[in-house]
Image (cartoon, rainbow, N blue to C red; front, side):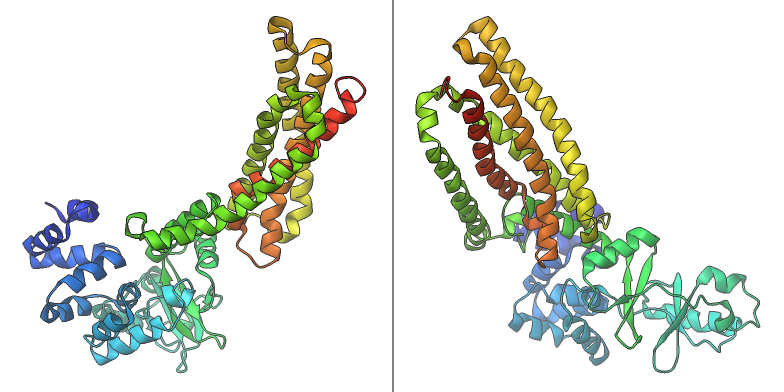
Length: 432
């Protein structure tokens, strides 16, 4: 079995099969494999190996990969594994572990190519050749620093090769460098990569000292992680901290029960709203036939708007200052969508009465009540769905918390109020 095949099948194998497959690999293939699997899988494999073998595999990892692996184990195991590294690597990994996992500092690699500005180009190329033997994260970009490690500029390897041999690095470098602060959130870092299409971005502290670099392969994992978290929150639950099959019953219950209880309490207001219109329902039971139609249309339109706005915010396409523009756009869109669904609702009632009967002399009024209510409910749904994420963002919460079920619950209650209010106005004195 090739290394790539084993990586793909790894999670489906039992622990014994994993160990047997790993030991069957040649040394070179085993090194490639160990560097290819994710941090959680590497940590689980490492802990299954005898203590005498762990040192070899820990020292194979780059500092940032070692830090990622250590974040997957318990505190006691972390101390034990950290002690297997040599002093230099142990200090580098300890620095990375001090950062939050989802900050730029927690993503960065401390092994990057650097030059002094006063070096000549020919000297710089010789110096980079020696640096390349130190397992640098990337050598496509070289960062220019002073003696205090302040970031002064950047130069690509291509620019160095094209420059005159006697020119200095300062003359060749680009002084304006796009960088991120060490405490920047990983989602903000991913937006920079998307905007500039860089292979790497330097990480600096508040004083402008370069601390490391974040590379494109790190951001690919971040994008997957953020998309997974948002998708789980869209479903009306907290994001899982582990893969689905690795999440125990207790954690799964905890992540889902809270939001489910909140949504259940919200739905209680739906029952209260129907109780408020109990007299109208008793006089015209036919109105209840269209309740699912009304509230589902509002919930669906709200979920659409909420999903679109949350994703646009995640991509950096929307800011809080765009709230008024979004509201105007969604009101117009909601009106157009409501008119379409309202027309369909009106036709549903009137045509059904023509061909099958059942609504009596008030079929047209009932159809108009359904149609007008749909216009109002869909407009409210699109407005609520688009504004809730922006409101939560303004309050400092995660916009993804304005999940589709939450929006649908809010619109259910409002939809009933709109529907029975319109029906009372149109059918008062006749059916009601």
